[in-house]
Image (cartoon, rainbow, N blue to C red):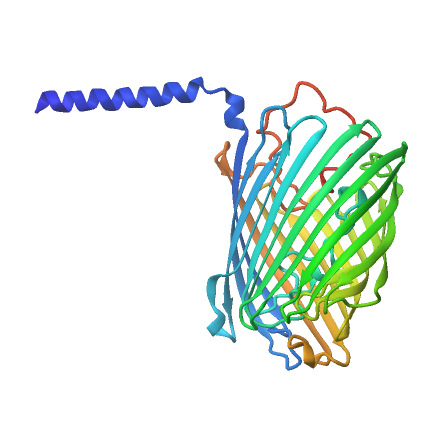
Length: 464
């Protein structure tokens, strides 16, 4: 028996020794390519219209959201090329206890960038969310500034902000996109994009599907100008059975899009225009030929930025009635008041013209974010949502005729913990994005990446 125990101890020690030898033999850079962080946000919200309906119901909601963030960067990259964020939420209602639960509101998003060569890059991203019958008014993402035309998307769709406004009940949304960019010459590049956006209306029934595929050529005409031209085909299938095929041709210029604006006060402009053609289908809203325009103006200071502009074109209407000839005006402002305090505000006013109904939406938000230390932060936010639907609203099965609005106030406290490669309280954080800054664990490249002259900043898209 003693011999067997001794043999067992020898085998255990041998296995432990092999494991330790393996760990120490793996280059440190390989381990440093992975990073992860866990955060927990606890907050209290008051809303005067918890279901965003004409007959208002107010409520206090306690919200707690754990988030697991995973990052990876291969050797030679100083920023993550793969990131994944998993955020299920728990809700406790003071007056609507039947909605209490964990996971009915949840989000998952991730993206992976693969640099096949210095000239060719692919990016795959996916965003998934589940929403319960309540409408918390902006907590699930806020407003997104339309991207520069050279990123390939030509601006984000205003309908992406409609999920809190037009439909009631539970629903699931998922959007997957693939982006490719190729640098043909130092001053010429090409991009291709595909996006598939699906919404499943669990309570009301039906699905809404919107697919787009686009190609674009970009010419660096001068140091401060990127001329571009592209073609996009879109296929829309609405929950009410309407469908529409859209063909879009556009061209434009990004002024100062290559200029480093981080510390020098200056003004930048991106503009794109073109024509969209209804290719057929019973859900095509607006005229057979529609102008599509995207204008974005950005002013940057050392500690603040202001972005404003307008977009016009054919977009989905989030299950209301097929496609819409949509015009949107937006503005976003961010200011770093002190080293730890940041203020933000945003506005979005949109006019939707569909086959069955015209309606208007207005969304506004403002907030303060304060970093108590590297691992603990707090925030105070206010949101206002408004929608006004005209004649024909009742026939859509989603909208009600007339105006509906809501006001929400949300205060929260968020703590962050590093899981790998550092274990413990978070040591660094990006206050503006309220996400971990994890560039330190990643290997530093020995050579700077080649300058293309046509790339965008990391916040707007990968460089070809």
